[in-house]
Amino acid sequence: MAARKRIAILGSTGSIGKSALDVVRNLEGLEIFAISGRSQIELLKQQAVEFQPRFVVAADDRLSEEISAVDFTGGGATELLVGRQGLIQIATAPEVDIVLAAIVGFAGLESAMAAVQCGKQLALANKETLVVAGQLITELAVQSGTQILPVDSEHSAIFQAMQTGQQKEVRKVVLTASGGPFRSAPKASLGAVTVEQALAHPTWQMGQKISIDSATMMNKALEIIEAKWLFGLSADQIEVVIHPQSLVHSMVTFTDQSTIAQISPPDMRLPIQYAFTWPERVAGPAPEMDWSQTYQLDFSPPDFDRFPALKLGFEVVEKGGSSGAVINAANEAAVDAFLKSELSFTDIVTACREVLEHHNFEAHPSFEQLVAADRWAREEISRWIAA
Image (tube, rainbow, N blue to C red):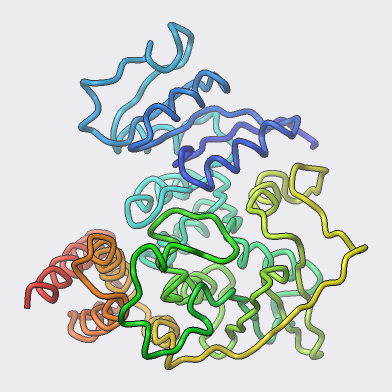
């Protein structure tokens, strides 16, 4: 790479964060300046000892009295920070070149927004940032000159494919979806799906929340909304296709009807690396396609009746405003309730729709209004469960 890049990883103990650290292990020219974690403190300590960052953030304020800097560094130069202010500090540190936003859910919004406000290059794995506050974030990015580089495999694939043409030449993007563990299960059986069954993704190893989102296909609904803001698209420029092999990560169709696809084995290190090294490409740890094998690539349209979350995604794209914040918060709360066996699998999306349809819509919400909408939607899910 042309110059050394210093990276702050927001959420280094999650699946994306761990993959990002493996990219750094394998590439010269990348330096870990700061890392953060919430609950996996022992893993955070191990990462700090290995990479010796300038800062480590224990994101949970409740841990402030349980952790000392010595726990992380053995008395080295690493400084311990705690809580939301610590996250904002590392996201805006003048020494940082790239901020990887990998904190799952609404919890990752504030620090990602802080990085954008001060003009950091943002490697965005937290799709909820744009789902909740797409209009605010994109406006701030224009003002600060921030480059937002997608880390989701689907959006990275679209970004890569778009390099072959111009924005004005894009007719539509096609988001691929594995279909999750229930793409061919009898619809009548979905109401009895257990937590263990929903967590068993056929392709990817992910955290619990993202795995459940994949099973309901709410993850794809959120990706539809994210694509709108990342690439300046309308609802009729976004399609979803079921692709069980997860080799084609997404596609772009241009005005001349040529469709460009990005193909690689399913491994998150590739899109993470591309965000870190862009606009350059370098050799890295991700596996390559083995063309001595026979591959089968299947594509089929999604079943909107089986996966009603997809309809919600397109509706939120068309409506905009506070809708993204409400659907995201309702889904986070509903998934949490399902994981606690307080809500059935099929009720996750049903509850989200009811909350979305009954919220007080704001066409141009402020950050404070988005926070209020998030809180209201979570409370509504609790009331829906108790009813």
